[in-house]
Length: 336
Ligand code: TRP
Image: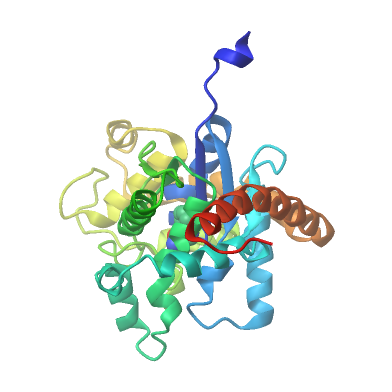
């Protein structure tokens, strides 16, 4: 009875680039929620390695990072039997659909992408066509799986908008082919800022390693970085304008402990920043400890990672190829 009345779960898709070890910001802002999403929806999660080569990668390091990010997906609790976990480049349909969609996307639309404009300034020596067409590959990722929902942070909103435009355009030009994806605005993850300049987002590409905490930093490293975080001279733990350093640490602490700002202010009334920083460091260490431990187990088990990737690629290909075939047929390609 239940089987006929229950609506099918919505599909949610998200990808993470294997370009360096994710930070505490990536974790608290996005990854921490993926396990919940996997339980609530029909999830597909990928390591977006094709996206990562818009920047030059050192081969041995790149290979390690791809495996590490797959291990991290397992470490945050994603279950390869429940969700589709895969490596993007192992599913050729992504490259194939991306080429096709390039021909349904205008130069002018891509030129307006703010991330392209920013990145072409920061990597002025390598403004490649892949960097320009990056949002189309992302649209292919999403549309291949007929994803209903895509969790997006502020920096990816414009890219999801383009994916929607491309889907709608194709559907109108031919006939309904793609699900038009919606942004998934979940429980507000923390927007974690740099520990050295709390007006900037925490970023793993920051030249100053003291500005970010990596999800695999050892406890003593985490303590040191938080101890040296920039604060202010007022000396009281409260959330207020002009206290961006403290606000950031409060946000991190709130996210790890589930406390509200009011509770934190009450707990630290009359105490100094030293005590507060020690508490924040402890909370972050405990938050990341199980992930680091599981990561160490998985990342050393290359055979298991290979098996997870192979199984994921097979399941992903089944879904993706169905969409790709539909698209190719509508355009008029001669199918084998
Ligand atoms: N561009 C995304 C990022 O840098 C990663 C990504 C690639 C992605 N393909 C995606 C995210 C599809 C969501 C859906 O964060």
